[in-house]
Length: 170
Length: 100
Image (cartoon, rainbow over all chains, first blue to last red; front, side, top):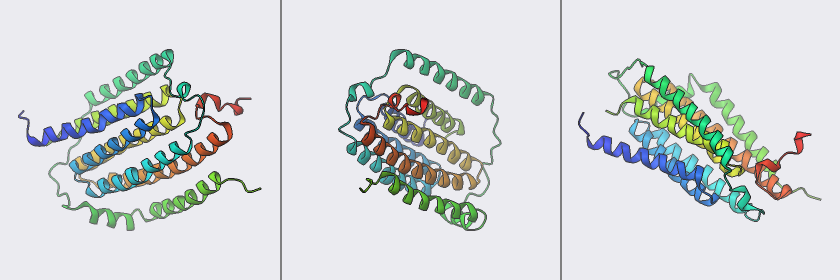
């Protein structure tokens, strides 16, 4: 199997996704974790481009990087004065060993399932050049009800998070 | 063409890293970030299968997952800020008043 340009770029994007992911989990500084999360989301967006899902790639950048990560950063900065930050960011040895064993078992079962899998490929069917049109059609016809329910969920979240986090007025 | 199994492997690795984060870290922010990582890994899987099966339903599902993840992050961060304000810590082992 020859290694083409596409494979190299894919590997770079995969590393851009995986390495910050490790930093998120193992960094002792919460701010470093939050910034590493930016790069993980950016790498995921690149993977979506590889999979011809342009709309999702843009959505990923807008919602995750522009929304969730920035919100997370603000929340971290708002709770900066908490005490005992050293203790909070510590990783205890026995817990690490147990979690590592559990994660290894999980990864092993994933790999085992992957090894035996035979997927029905449909590689030659006509795939629309732009997926946005197909997505719009599906969202407004077959999946109209879930779409509306999600918009109600967003409204509830908007009101609910404001109610939860406001300071109680005396 | 990149084989489907590469995407599935990458997604499995990201999911496992997220699980390790949830299990080991005691900072509530890191736990939230790890949950986001796991959702992200599931999304990669869905989009990869959607591409290789030439079926857009997977991408529709990813849109809903992204929406719910954003909603979850908003509510969770509001709760965390409230908790940090009232208890003065973000260390999850100290949030034990419901233990009885």
